[in-house]
Image 1 (cartoon, each protein chain N blue to C red):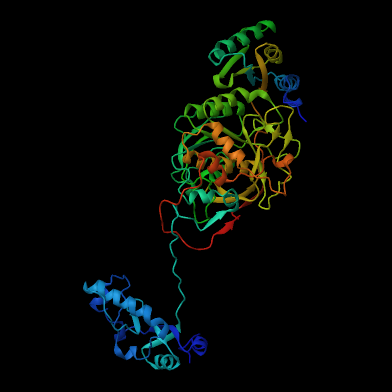
Image 2 (tube, each protein chain N blue to C red):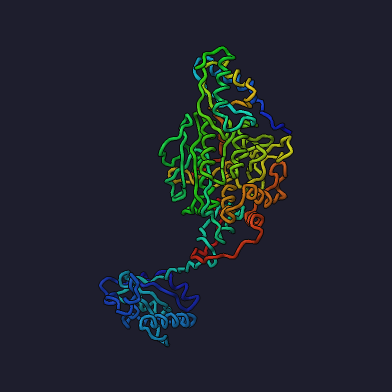
Length: 451
Length: 119
């Protein structure tokens, strides 16, 4: 029969099916809902007591009855203000404004419905599942998190409330697109150094390219429809536009001095000159002396290469790892003839297939130690929230001593290996992760690793 | 194993050679000068003026041939602008100067690889 669509197979298997019935306009069945239904408050008010003639086509399946009865009793209790007692549940619910009825029916019931002049169609009811809340997570867990976040276990710190809140991360780069939805309310301060290295008064947060927005997103991008890709999604950014072009050395030095002026504790910098030059040693020493942890990229030129100042002994130098725990060929590494930290990089972090935001509300994946570095800066922000009085050395030691060198890497390329946020937290605070402190309603869907 | 000293491209002779090539057409060139750690941050400004003054004198240039630009005390650094290659050589020869770099650097950003838009 044309009015019946896709219902009979279910009925043949189970003896009945939940069906959705399209009712013709003008049918008395679609008359205004009774007061009880209206009081239930549904905007699309469901009529609990439709015409008896329609109800005769429906049934109450046995396994559904206890739940339906309990629901009906509870509803009656709320409506009447009296203690719940046994009530007769409706066999069908009519949604007048939608023009549908919903209930269970067997073959005879479906045939009877189809024979009615005021029924246009009988079809299987769509199966809707409840999106259940996740208990005991401090922050709303996004639908997806990047592999980098999962690899460093940052999400385990989020789950107990450490999201970087209250921490400002310094960022010297091509700037940042402050209008990107993933960076909403994420910019604490922004400064632009023009091509001559002069501060541009009142400059709005902008990106002269896209590199800076991408690295900023990895540090603290807020979760969007593309999932979660920011390591410290409640931290804020102090960003300086210092590259590219013009008197870039002066621009960078100006940016570093600005970071010290603002008493920022963490500096993420994915730039540097190929090879080794001691030119930046004084400013790096000044960063350390002012309690700023310099987290710098090692470079993308492969074995026996590095960039300055990412190759200094007193910075946290970052190489790249791929999701299969291998060090990609491009990731720089170099051994220096010096007693302190002779091997560059200090550690490796996710730097292959890194999803983050780029200007214009867009997103992109990129590879590079530039992408690995902000992962570690974000991790430092999580740790600094956990222990705000931690010194620069405390933070650095906690991160370095949390690292594990997977069997797929060699120390000459990865040095200490990959940091672990949970272990770093334990090393910094001297205790295990606390229990979750706040419950929140977050989707229970299985988390999938975004790229 | 690399020594933690300047890579060949950043050694003074190599930088000076590039600067001389750029300044040979008479156009002013900007250089970032980095002083040794023995210079106190509070003395950077006066020391910069002294270095530039001496450099002009030692290279036989007028006192205004070299201009001090921005000063970065924490970096123990200052920029200078000059159009005469001899000026840079005289600056490098100062005992208080550790290194110099061209202010403009075309390769300071390690370019990302395998960029995939909107994956």
